[in-house]
Image 1: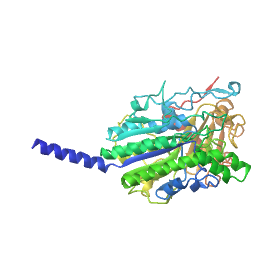
Image 2: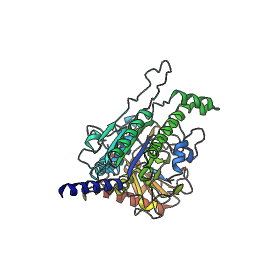
Image 3: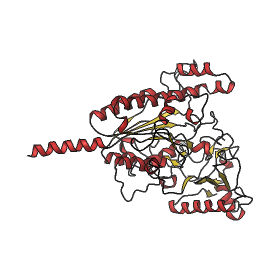
Image 4: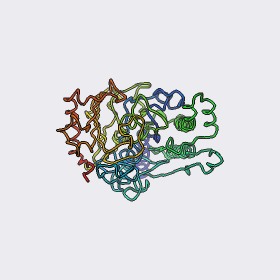
Length: 460
């Protein structure tokens, strides 16, 4: 009788495991909103990403929760905005000429602590086999190793700068795209064999500098180029095309394993592109909080929920992936764990999200200006941003704290206000023309500071 019971229990456990959808998350590095074909790229080619977009839901207003790598990944892993974990930049929030910094930035942390429940922790507790492949970027002294934050498997490539720059020799897999893709394929195959649902996090190093591509891909775009601008983009385009090929390989594996209809797939990026690729009509690039620095390609395919080829204009963010994946997995989140995002399930079925606004907070300095930026010296100075409906407001801390604050808004340039519906390029600042909307968003942003205990850069 006991043997019969155990056999039935084992069968039930397998049935429950098989009922949970697998999760494949493909995360690009520095891929711009305009760098994929379905968003209007012309010289660059992303046929597999474009084809994938036709099978799922495109979020036209998809965002990264930060404008550069490390904080964006911390927000993703923790499911929280930057004030909750104080990861704001890569290494330091004081990057650039310190004499030109009018405020003392908030110190940066390197990652989320081991004791903080991560997205992988939650899925592992829900019975998932978890693996991350590629860039981690959340390590000591404040962060930890991925195997201590819920991942069962961690594989990175030996990617790096080209070791033969003097000869111009190009590595066969310079960004580790294909070696890591193969590791993900093996992970998914093994998970299926073990009859265990999986969370596979493909965390690419591409497109991030140093720009590199396979020899044949680089040569293809060099031959395709007809203008000086295109010739300068050849290696960038090659790296993007290699990434696209890797995406296709993973999607093909889902089909080959017969699990595509039970696998939730998300493709997006951690922040906007570097200056090598202009994001016009969007303003700015990586490191800036204009649209070119934070708006991303964002595709979700959730079998049984998303309609192939559908589009949704609701603003969403990588901050929403933790609750979305937890929802799909049936994961229970402890009551003391704060999640700033929302599950995207309602949007997949014609509903709406509960929130009315999204936020960004960067109390530091990043050097090297961006295309059509506000500042000729920095990608950004300390700034906080709110998007509410079609409206977006930037609050610059230097002018706010040192130049009269609210009382001097008519002259101090502390605030910029844009209507993204009519001005996606953030060219026309409406903060003087629509003071009612300006004050509404400003009040919402200041209230959010209070609710998250957001730290501002301090007066020296």
